[in-house]
Amino acid sequence: MVGSKNMSDSGKSRKGEINQNEEKELSKEELSKEELSKDIPEPEEIEDTATILEEEQEQEAKAKLKELEELLAEKEAEYQNALKYQMAEFENYKRRTEKEKREFADSRLEYFIKDLLPIKDGLEVAIEHTHTHTPVLAEEKTNSEGLVRGLEITVKQINELLEREGLEEIKAIGEPFDPFRHEIIAKEKAKDEEHPKNTVIDVMRKGYLFRGQVIRPAMVKIAIDENNAE
Image 1 (cartoon, rainbow, N blue to C red):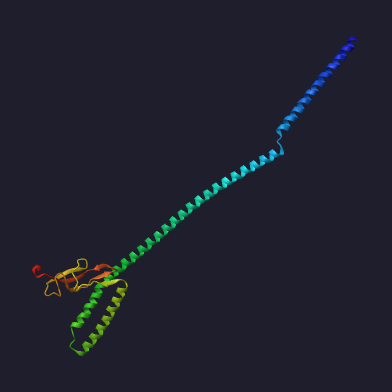
Image 2 (spheres, rainbow, N blue to C red; image 1 turned 90 degrees about the vertical axis):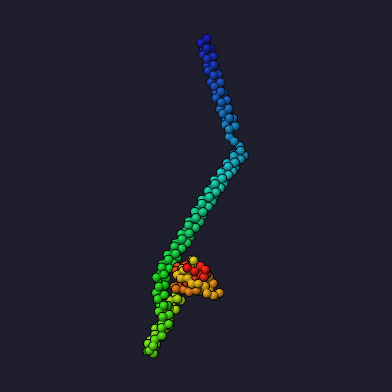
């Protein structure tokens, strides 16, 4: 009897322990559910969080876009400045090239004119000589006149051509002596007021300007004061 009683008590004790364990497990499960329910945000909170994230992403995207726009504007300004610089350099190069071409052409033309002037001088001397030496025979006179007309036409054409290119005869007779334009070959005492001292009274060889610059001074005779005559 005693044994059966002990077994009965033991069974009851085990049942009690099981019940207690089950109660503990249920308590833990209920506690976990409560904790989980606390951790789960409300729908309003989820919506607010999503809105905040969208706003942050939008602000970040706007900031990046603004940064890219500023970088693009900076690069465009650099490109425009570089382009303007290159265009200016190219224009300067063109101007320098054109100037060098003009100077080279002018220099070649100047040398050509200088070489042509003695020929022109010779033709003018020949014309003057035929005017001062009249042929005795009528036939010679006729031939001489035809030759003179031909020479005069030739010299006129040469003068017109050279004038178009910028050649200009230096004024001499009656002009005050100019050391930059006149070269003294002879001197003569001033005889009257028409030829005051240091005035050009005769030209031995014509002088010329080419586009405003002296390319050959005129060889001249000037009037001097009688007291300073050598």
